[in-house]
Image (cartoon, rainbow, N blue to C red):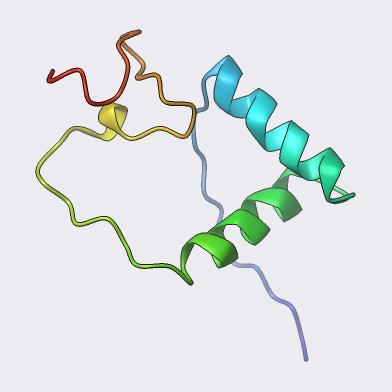
Length: 76
């Protein structure tokens, strides 16, 4: 099996999200951040997806805090 990765995906993470990613990576002894992201994607795709409700991209985060500093679910 040839493992060809022909697409590059660039994402921006908050310092809190990056810390969570690195914690996951080191806890599971993964060689790179990219490997950790791929594993998290694989895990996330095995569960029921969240139905999009028209929120902005900045409303989706993994640390519970949006880019604007508010907590998710604050109504904004």
